Image (cartoon, rainbow, N blue to C red):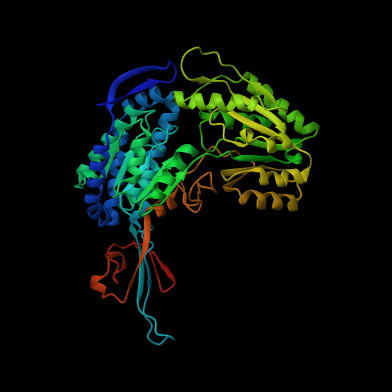
Length: 510
């Protein structure tokens, strides 16, 4: 039997007890158990599902300092970051619990029959039902919030889908510890064990087998473009294809107008460097490319950023694979003709440390070199100088789909210019940021964390916020059914007291 060991990113040394790696047989057993659990979990009342999420959150909090210590050591992230991420993890579990308690995920809609209409209209009632078992692939850069009990798991369990998690091998001990909290909550709720399973493996083949498992009805993934696309392709090859909700690479472009630079160049430079190096530059929302004018002010901005980068401390990356990928991508970029590089310190001799780096170039070189246009996962970014105002607007033509896009502008900017920039960027991104930085992702009703390919494989969906639950349901319409035979969500007296739309009018429940 193979095992996984925890590794210390700051030293590169293994520590702690090994975690047992999954086999093909383990995947098959998890799939069969999830299928068996599907009927039970999908038929639970909204209040019971909300209670399960609340209990998972409580049990994660009950893990106390042991969880903080192991997650911080496995990832190299500071304690304060892990504490904050734990709060986000438990907060989103409880928030989605409140969402499903109101029945928002069910979207129950009733149109009473009308025999006097032309033609006569039957009684029609629609609600969402759970897809079935969901395979969740945990992310490396959020060991709690996008991992074993993260947003994908919370959203799937919220709507009644069993979950099989493929834990990330970068933090196996953290994953195993959190899994105990979820498993205990599932057991205490009286649910079958197949409601939640965690598999550990470093083998891509295990992930592929999980996607191909006959009982799996959907996939949620956060990671690299190569990994997400491989799973998407595997799901499409199935005899009955299934949806893959993959969040992948994103460059998160930033456009800075001349008026904004004139008003606050120093503050923008500070904000940019802080945002691109936050968390070692390992956020999917890191600003990876900035467009400025190729004039005296634009070139001065490059110097401001370069000065700050050269003073920046080295960043510890999450695991050896990320360091290798970052080193390779950065080496390719700095060797491109027509670029200038500024690099910070890399004073550590052991562990997975990386020097913050900025590469500046012109739009012509950026356009001609695909390497510069790809995501640099880690503390690196590209500044591109364009010839004129029209160049700022058409910069969007050079971009692939992203999770975010940012405009830094000023009150003196021409509203027509702002409108053109907004139109150009909304075609390329799922969230547009005004005079700020995209690295913070709030868990709210209005948040959209998604974007056109290759940022995601399903740009109409979000992996963060209340709407995240919609990924794992599908609508079913009931025509002319007797009231007693209807699902509880659609019965006339509304036994679950959920929010519904009746004959075109929103009617709140409790």
